[in-house]
Image 1 (cartoon, rainbow, N blue to C red):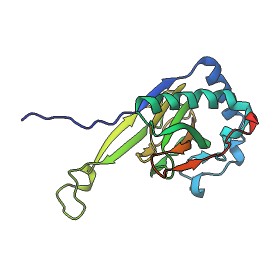
Image 2 (image 1 turned 180 degrees about the horizontal axis):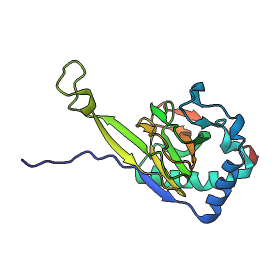
Image 3 (image 1 turned 30 degrees about the horizontal axis):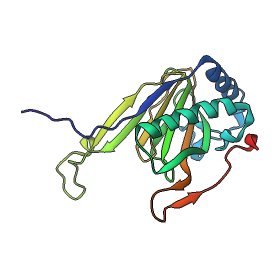
Image 4 (image 1 turned 135 degrees about the horizontal axis):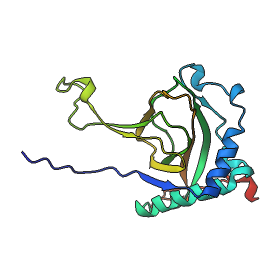
Length: 208
């Protein structure tokens, strides 16, 4: 029997410069995490900051660098029916020992990314239901219905992926906190052919 592995999914990884990494490291480490709530008020989940960090001038160099990398993915994937992609939400995450995050995807965005600030445990799991799974037939055991990829935490790197790709974070089994930045991007300007739509908004108050 010969297996043909087809229709691959591509994720994109970039390494930041020392300057960019230092900017976001200092910023995230200065967040008042003690008074930042757990996600959904669940004690076993990590903590999440407000979702508009990209508007803070203190990290504009990080935002510019990351957005440039998003544009590179846009070109590589030939997303030519929009002029550019801009951040619509950006937030910091902290998972202490014993904390994790459930499986989810990011609705109403096109591309998403995770920047790994620090940590040594708490892998990101990407999951997609196999096409061999048929919901109304019990042909596969539930534990075998997903195609999964485990991405090891790697500080100083950015990982870009389609927003509708489901992902989760495994338990942080280290005493070292897992710190990340998550961002969602949407097209700006004219999008699509024919009627399409136009989105005009300023996501960068520091550019006024």
